[in-house]
Image (cartoon, rainbow, N blue to C red):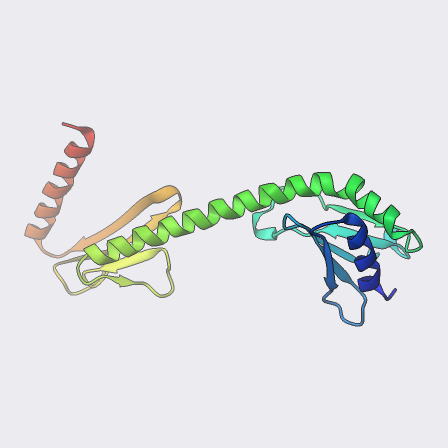
Length: 197
């Protein structure tokens, strides 16, 4: 089934302002995309399943990294002989309501993830600027090493890991008794201040 771009262009014209069509990824005109005004992306292609053979599949595309658990496939099938205006009506009635709701949730999750990543990066950058001899650990982007790391030669060293939700997990190693006692006193003082004692 070829000519998907032409079909998609005709459908986009009916869907109206903000809708456009572009080539798909299969090559040879075998598929196309419809792009909507609010980030909608619909894949238009020949039916790929036994039940949709000989029909046209139109599916809403989501970023899989941010989809909900058990997110249904947002897909409809139409006859390849159906007029573009009728296909556009099917899209508006049968596909877009649930797909647009899922897309909005997808975008919200993505924004939440990006905000959390930015907060993590700010925190780790700040820690790296404060801690002595700090290094960002190459294979562990959520960690900052300091003082030569957990097994360094300095009297005190370790690493801190940014855990989900802003929690920080510390590993501190020292081979010096005085440094250990000073650290214990520092933790005691910080704990009392946090409690408001």
